[in-house]
Length: 298
Ligand code: SF4
Image (cartoon, rainbow, N blue to C red):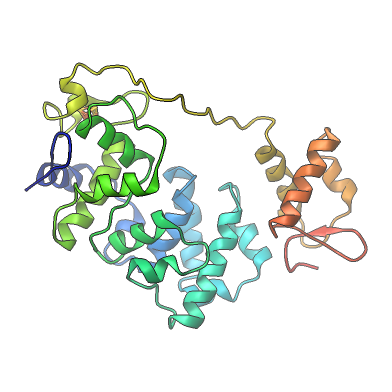
């Protein structure tokens, strides 16, 4: 079974066989994992590595095994349980999606892409990932790892160019086997290959099931010539400051005075800008007497 588009084909069977043997044993991939567990994992994994997600995911599924159980928790509880996963707006998005699933879908995660897309906070990637990984459906699931493997193995480029939802999904769609189950396995396999073998900095071509077939390898691994990618730094960024401010609130049980927040970052302009953005995002609330708290905790 070979899937083709303009470029070199990827043999789906080869990739799926490799995945069966080398794919990681992750709890959200177990057959007994519910679609809800898959949805939670997909939101957590979007910007956080597997090793940090796994313990938090286990705690969450133990504490909130169904959408309705998460929906009944307060936003403050959810943000506290999100811990240090980063990008905490994801926690509120998950909470909002859980509420909609509980009230509008009988506590069952929908199985089709359009219904998933209509849920609050569920975007193109998550909707297709849930359809494929929770329900075994044919849907193009495109993340950074997938884009990189396709760029190299199919198009012979050293890396993927700037993301384009429509073009990237069409690219991957053309590679998918035609029926649901192998297409869903293919989606998981190509993503795993990008995560484990065809990595950004040091692809291990000798260990790759596509070695000898890959367009980039066969072309002699020409250097990437597309636009430079922005470097993601953390130290000193607003993201770091927002995290420090939220930590103060996560580590207390009630509202705190502004002085407690001021203590975590010396640059007052940046600190106040970050606090303002947390208030705007609904991650922090201000009490009538000027204190600050996690949402719903005052
Ligand atoms: S052969 Fe190398 S570059 Fe090609 S897909 Fe495999 S790891 Fe990536």
